[in-house]
Image 1 (spheres, rainbow, N blue to C red):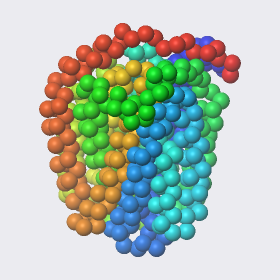
Image 2 (image 1 turned 90 degrees about the horizontal axis):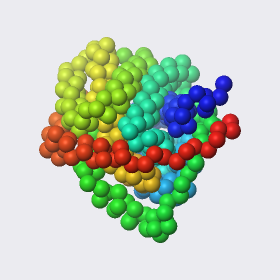
Image 3 (image 1 turned 30 degrees about the horizontal axis):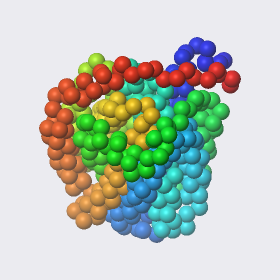
Length: 422
């Protein structure tokens, strides 16, 4: 069946892209519940030290992504967003497969660094979706991509954890490489992009100037700062959770960690879809502020949790503020720039995410090693409370931001899609 005749071209592209995003998120998140356990298997026996090395590996990926993120964004505006999606997926599949052969923890750090440099599927997919959706459906389009990402993050850790407990820590890397490869092929053959290159003036501008132009947009920088600290707080638990679960259920640590990440992904996906719907009527800035305070409220009680079931409950509840925060910030950012600047914007967003995804696990792992695993919950609660206060002060009631979005709705519609020949 050719769905191209049943729905508008931009919507067809969006749904196919969302499916590919789901597969890539499913594959990339396979390793979340057992990466610290794999580090232990490679010779780092101490659980706290394993969490630290996992943080180092994630930090390496974050540094590399921070450096190259804006470059990929500029290339997307010059040569197309679809090539950037393909680059991130094909490279990710190859690097994941190679990680399955890693002989030592140093190679884990190396491969995570390469992953950070060459991937960035969410940023690339969001740029492609935002550049083609009608302006009044932009929040919906970003919400669909975020929902697909969260759903993939729901299934990946669960399947990865079960496979790791059943077959060891290397087999899942080969399976996840295949899953991401299928996503890449889906984009290659079924996503259509009629790309309009950047203007000659935009082509002549240096990457630094393009970044300055994007960051100079009113209200954008405060939202970007909130996104950075929110992602930082959310990722602090990544190296901690598997060894935290190991302390309660040592025989099924990977499976229980996978289930926790799965619940987080499921609830985040639901929250993302709801925000995508109400964001066109209500002020997204209010969602952002409220989500920050809710996250602080759900993090703090976990300091006293010693039951794996309660740990699962609270980690699942964290999906509510996570879905709200990530979707609201990305939607506000997308609505702040023109179509021709979407690639540059998401290159900047990728760099901000890279700082968070790199520094968050490193700080979380370091805190876990120095002060104990449970200290991370207290620090996260305090951080999100401060993020909420800062967001409230910077964005206020959100009238200015909402007005900017409403003004953007009068922008011209995207160019017509090329006839669907597939």
